[in-house]
Image (cartoon, rainbow, N blue to C red; front, side, top):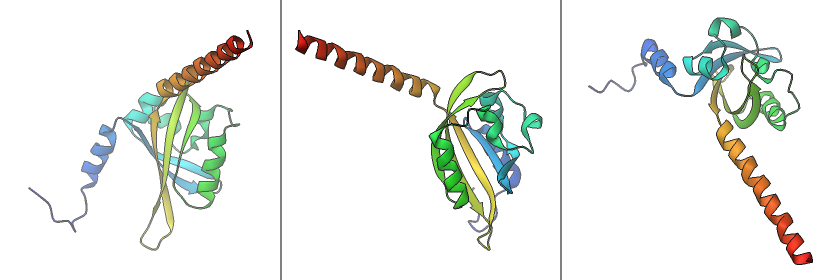
Length: 153
């Protein structure tokens, strides 16, 4: 049965859909310079190793574990200052301290008066891709080194 398009979506259905996602999804609200987590789905818990009650009401910065010298963090700061969406890849750290590469997509949510209400963050573990790219780059550099050695011989 198709529902009336003007009818609001059932909130319980929406929560179940978000919890069923394979990607980590968080909702944060702006509080000064911080974006305070007010929701995290099950996939975020699995990705980060943190349970929801351990992370709610704090900024997502805890995932960097002090590793703040990252180009992606500057892009996030600029996007947040301008209430814009952005997508970056960051080094993050699980509760057990292990590093993972996180593709983070942040989108602002506005109310009917065009005021910023929340940010939605969708996180994907892209560790395998980033490591594969690094191995390919290292192999390419080694190949180029060998080419130079052969041409000089």
